[in-house]
Structures are given as C-alpha cells and as structure tokens.
Image (cartoon, rainbow, N blue to C red):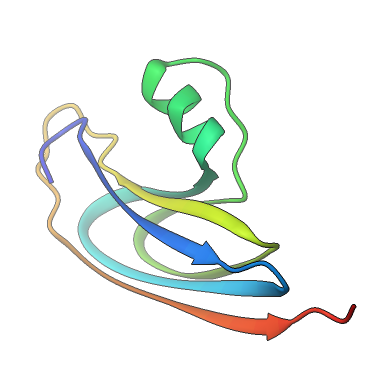
Length: 100
C-alpha cells in the first residue's frame, strides 16, 4: 500500500443478528485499521470529523469488535508519508441471532 493510501472491504450483518468482526493484520510497517459505518467512512474520506467502531495501529493487529445489524467498512490505512507498506489481513465475522 502506497504512503497515505488506504484499501477497504465490507462486512454485512443481516437484520436479526449481531456480529463480531475479527481482524488480524500483519504488515511490513505500521498501518491503521478502522471499522466504520458508511456515513463515517464518507466523513473519513472527505477529511471531516468521524467516529469509528474500532481503531488499531501497528505491524501486528489482532482485534475484534461487536456490532449490530448493518453495513460496516474495514479500512486499512498507511499513515506514512514515505514508506510503502505490504500487509496481509484476515477478516472473519461470527453472527449470533438476536432474540425477539
């Protein structure tokens, strides 16, 4: 990933379920990982104030976040101004039915 660039992927948690998003990242230099909803992803990209469901930073990240139904975007960001970062990421989501 080039300096200052990001990549992303989406996770959908269907109605009637909660989800736990598990994220593991190994990178050649420190990267930032965010979990956003769609609205806050737009805020992030446009440089406005945003909130997130998860934030982590480093060359090895092993984290998780519990979320409700909805669309979530996982962003892998290289904050460096000079260093290209290669990374490998594994994302899994565990779904649990919510009681009615």
